[in-house]
Amino acid sequence: MTTNGDVKSHSPTRSLPQKVAQQLMVDLTDRSIPGAFLYMVVWLAIVLPSMTYFGAEHRLQIILDLTCVVMGAALFRLLLLMYLQKHLHRIPPERGELLITLSVIVSSLAWGLSVAYLFSLNRFQ
Image 1 (tube, helix red, strand yellow):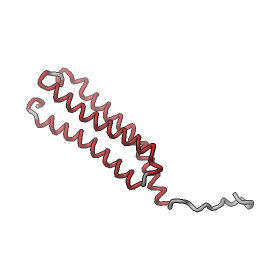
Image 2 (cartoon, rainbow, N blue to C red):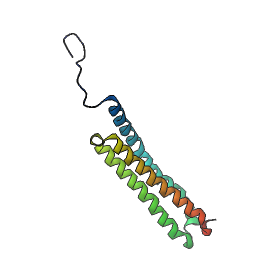
Image 3 (cartoon, rainbow, N blue to C red):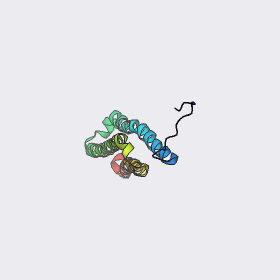
Image 4 (spheres, rainbow, N blue to C red):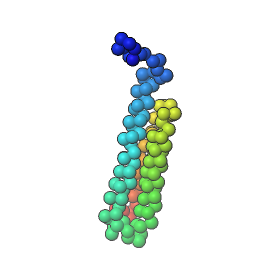
């Protein structure tokens, strides 16, 4: 502060749009981490109560494989988001956005392809 009460003007190292984009990535990363956990819990909430159905010998291996796929995608997303959260101040917002989008695509593909595969099998009709 100056002697007359005015705030000193510091030359910002980043422009306002860059700061907004950076804050958007921080907020998006922080809010996405609980979602990655939620996807794992939801899959287990769907599969575990139905183990009398899914656990039948001719279905069990498929469910275990798909559980690995969904959990692997969720873990990939979680680790990527945690990496971003830790290093976001050094990553350009465009790259952060790309990595977040990649994590969403991987997770969505795991869920979508798993469900589509289950629907296509006669054993699950």
